[in-house]
Length: 143
Image 1: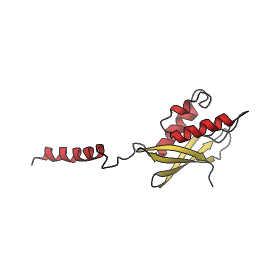
Image 2: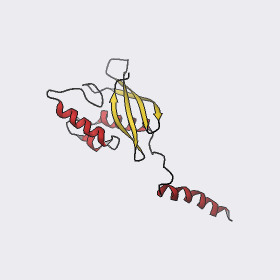
Image 3: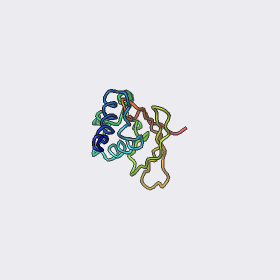
Image 4: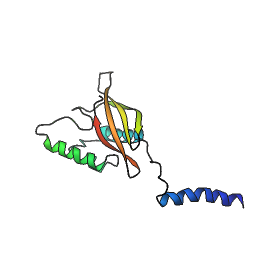
């Protein structure tokens, strides 16, 4: 058979198997990329994403976590800690560390930096693989 034919076969068979659900496609973004994209958007948001409820439209958050944040915000009477930052202030910068992976779960470390303090404040961002995409399902302080 001709060389071009084999190239087509090699390219089409995995694509067809993937579309039939026989081969699980790799997630488009890694857990670290999801966390980076979310926090870059969140910290750079031109207003308050909690007040505007803009987080609800984030493609990086699991529906269950959005509902949890909604419930947390509804329980605040006179303010409270931001559920994504676990703080009241907006950091001046952040860095994302490596991911600890276990099957369909991941934990990514995020260092938040506030003005004038060279020491980061560490958060752990939990993610689950949902419908082939990594989604943020929680934020906590490290153990």
